[in-house]
Length: 145
Image 1 (spheres, rainbow, N blue to C red):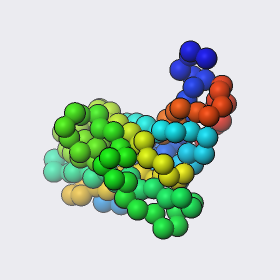
Image 2: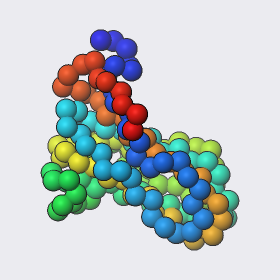
Image 3: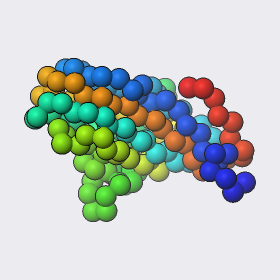
Image 4: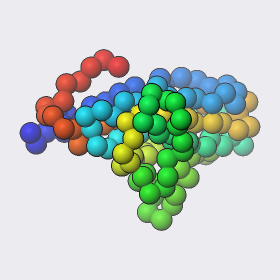
């Protein structure tokens, strides 16, 4: 299989939504079973507040989110060479209509992404998708979630 569609699986991480306060946006738990790596794609719309910052956090666990820990930098890949992966995935007030990515190459089965805003009193549109890759069996079968 040489096509991209049948070698990855897209999963909803954080549904696209408008955030109007500092409530952390916590993703679905992503089950990596059958895959060796993941890429979170963060879709940033408008960030209306002039001093908002959003910190990214990626957690991993062997059990469905029992005993989770923050993923080590060595188990993540960054979209910006020389920048810590969680720093590169984080964004702020002037990041309107941008995309951030955060890769995972660790060995745990379950992942969860959290985006935590600070100083957000305006409207901020965000969402995230997880792309699972390096499937043990191909072609992958895309579901609806």
